[in-house]
Amino acid sequence: MPSKVEISPVSPSHLPDLVELNEICGFPARSLEGWRWVLFDNPEQGDEPAGYVAMKEGRAEAFICTQRRSFKSGTTERSMVSAHTFVSRQRRPGVGLKLLRHMLKTHATDGVNTLNNNALSAPIYPYVDVHPWRGELGRLFLEKPVRWSALLRSRIYNAFKNSPFKMLASGWQHLERGVKPLPKAGEFAGFTVIDPADPSMSGLLDAFNEALQSGATLQPNRSSEIWRYRLADPDYHDAMRLLGVVREGALVALLAVSLAKDDMFSASALEIEDMVSLDESGVSDADMLEAAVQLAKVSGAARVRRRVITQSLADDVPAGWMLRERGYDSAHMQSRVDDLPDNWSEGPFDSDFFFALRRPEVLRVRR
Image 1 (tube, rainbow, N blue to C red):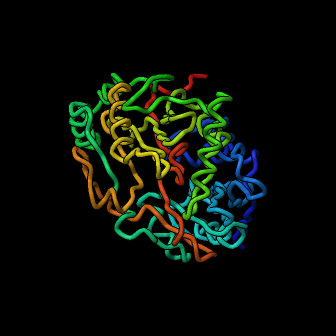
Image 2 (cartoon, rainbow, N blue to C red):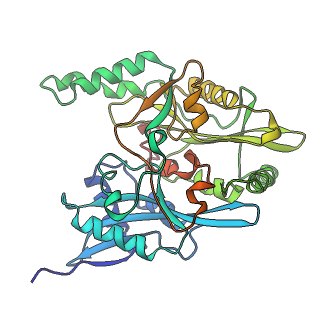
């Protein structure tokens, strides 16, 4: 008789298995400390499990991890889980589908979403009634080249990495030459690097968060506590920065960026992880994009990218930027309430980019 698969919430004792399966599936490497931070330090997790594991004969066969997120619009409050790190030992989806169905049945929030699933998991979600809801917009992203030479070398390395001439790709490390940790201070197109651990700045961040959440659309929790958590990655140093515009003692615009790369052979990118301003601030999308470009030039990134975009950015692509398209839907949702996603203005902040992106090796913490 085949042994039974048992599903349980993820606990710290499962972390070694998660590290192993994550590596088997080729996801960006994380240490035990890194996964402990991702899963168990989230201030919004509450009583919601940080994920589920399928065990068979004492061995972890599959994981699906979940980050609880809270949203608010005036007096309306909602919560969702962001699904991530869907990994399995088996090529066939049986155990993974069972695990996914269990999570969808047992979570205690208003909905489940993904904004960063890959081409392998994208076809699986509709089988369990989790559907792409962003349409064509869910396949589009913005990108601006900054260092053409690095992008050209990346294209060459990728062309040869699986060929008989793969030795020509052995110089992939050169792609990281010039990539530097993000600066701890400085001003970029009117945006100043800010530290959420600074008591004076934490108050401004909290007030900014309250102002955003008092509006008509559901907004995520961008409190100083959340930003301190997101910037505390134990595996990579100086990979992410928070910038803001402060006027008359108030924060009116916020930009979060991080350094990342698609794979070993790709050129680095400065990823926009959040980009938001108060309506009365006068700070435009173009202003925030320009600040990101200036920071990319200082850090040595080869390009700037925003992976989750708004319809307005798709309709009116900023000068010098390219509208790119994925070959699959990267965003899926199952909701238990009517105002998700109808009254939610989703963005890159709502995804798992802050821990799921692959980072340049030069930023790795050496232990």
